[in-house]
Length: 114
Image 1 (cartoon, rainbow, N blue to C red):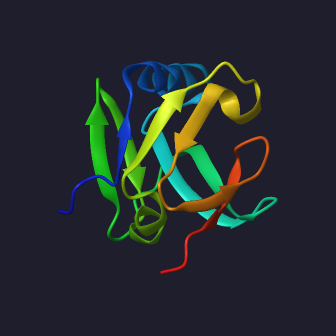
Image 2: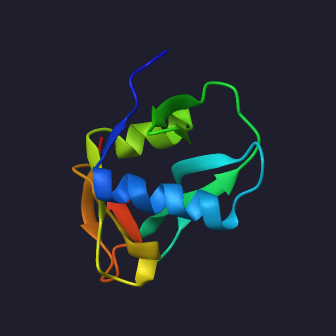
């Protein structure tokens, strides 16, 4: 299995744990990824899920299962997920070296040319 594509700081991990404890149900985990959309092309996704997908990369972080699909991992490689004081984005912020530019609220980005 490949390495998990991004680093998750301790304060961000605490937010993920809280999200799972407050809104999750048995068997759910946190899925991190990207999808088309947002202001600048790709939108960050942090959501609860209960279905593993083929090729998912998995990280266990203080008892919380966090997964990322292989395609998203290409856009998130080398990123750091941090806690932020912003209400937008659920208090999480991606520092992504693969972003050529980001929208003002930080929830979406334009990927660098490959």
